[in-house]
Length: 143
Length: 115
Image (cartoon, rainbow over all chains, first blue to last red; front, side, top):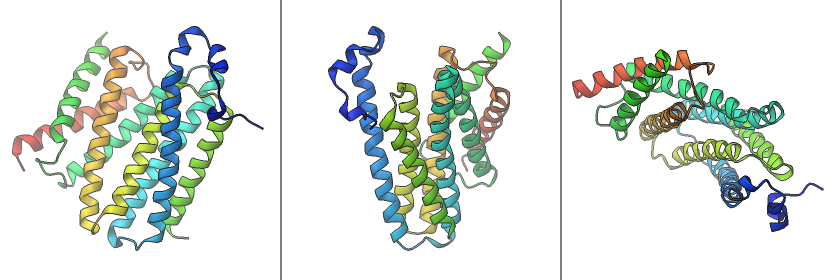
């Protein structure tokens, strides 16, 4: 039977390369958060399916949920593919760029539809991040 | 089967894939962080759908979440560009740069107009 992370021991840590031993507690903590997250999402799914739908808002909700599921699947696929190819960082970089582009396109569609008020919480932070990103991408493009 | 049930079943399957993966392999931390970020987004979407009082309340909430996620992922990419893990050779970067420029222009216009 396969061994889970929960069954891991300090003995396992001793077999990790030295530079990874320091990261082991961090990885364990993130692992525990992922497990807790999976459990919470399953519970939320059960609650959602048991309640009355929100009429006209449902299609947008399903589209949003479908997009998040795609993102989750891409994360799983990133590991399966990149572990074999030995280029996890590169693959995750490509997945992040694609995801960021999709998210910005969604926000752009909201902006063109005039459904974003100028006082929406987070808009100015988003603007500052975009400004900085545009400047950095411009500089790197010139190098 | 309704669209919602279809999406819910897809999500359950994705979660089962993740749990199976966690059970038999020693995942790199970068992969765990990706899982965690993706899971957080799914959880927020679900809780937003569950907690919405009505359709318009939900749509406002979806737009805020979308903006928040876009800001978050752009911030992560900014860090990756600065540390060199994402660069001019990364596939999709040219298209993304064009999207950033166009979005920035629209947001600047919106803030400037005070609409």
